[in-house]
Length: 457
Image (cartoon, rainbow, N blue to C red):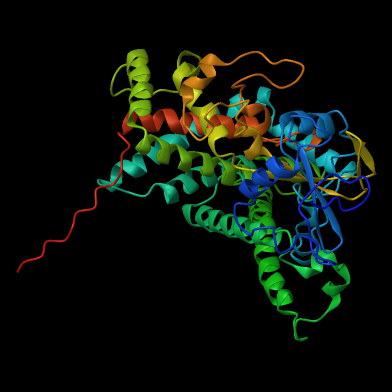
């Protein structure tokens, strides 16, 4: 066991200089971190395995594995734990340092979050219901047109992307929308690679960013240049399209082709030449893909939800937002989707000053990973966490002073903690609901049957 210092939290023993870079996996880090929590997270003889430490080439990291630790540090001490870790590759080299999810905590971030809140708060979200309903119906109609077994992933991504594009930037042609969706999807994949702990030496030694791409060993610069081009296109192309439509409508002195959107309002008000990224789109798509998988694997759960819908509105009829409060079993399914595989299983924060937690020193600038996957799979909170079981929330117990009860609503941490909680959670939840109920009302989801080829001998 390595304490990394006199009073640092315990953690796995690392190598000199390199630290634990060889032990941190490149995929599914949350499951490895959950295993490490069970080994190293039990500090000062407490039964709560909530915090451990590791190091990568001089950079400090801690992982919080329980809701209690996350609430104590990220919520109650939010003034210290609301920054982001230093991502030189994702930030300086790719150019994502100005985006909301990578911005350091300060006045600019607070201003951006206020603007997002004005467009995505629960009081405003209901105004998007008609748009969401229409896009969900288009999604269902697209699947119907396939007339056979189909992988819904592409259609899910299109539903989520089109919806967010309309809200963020207004209406576009199908070709423009498809281009923006594909750019956002590729940027999301590139970003995931850019923030992998230990993958890029430049994150530990920022001066390496000045090495030219032709220099031996600087191939990371070529990768960063490619990703930066994709980042620039994703961020600025939709804004430029909105501007062109607004200018065209102004010059013609007619009702504009740029429909009212979050971006057009910002440009009109001259408050910021801004953009709204589409992380909500990617997260929503992940939840919906999981929904299709779980319904195929659990036809009994699917049947219960469809029976509930049919008994409320009748077979063959399409449900809407007005039916949500009368569909409690559908709500249980949505809760379990959030818990079973959180769309953001690891959420990064960073400290702006040194702190002490349970007698352990946490240095300034420490990267703080909240293992939401571990929180949602903690056996004392969610019994049999490996089981997809919507009924578990019918047996939820109230919280106590020691832990947050049994089977609590996972939505309270699935979207993050503290001052960096996802500002689009209300919209994402509405998108998930309307797509799920319309799909359940229209389809029987099952495993595709692959017929063996006929061999004639």
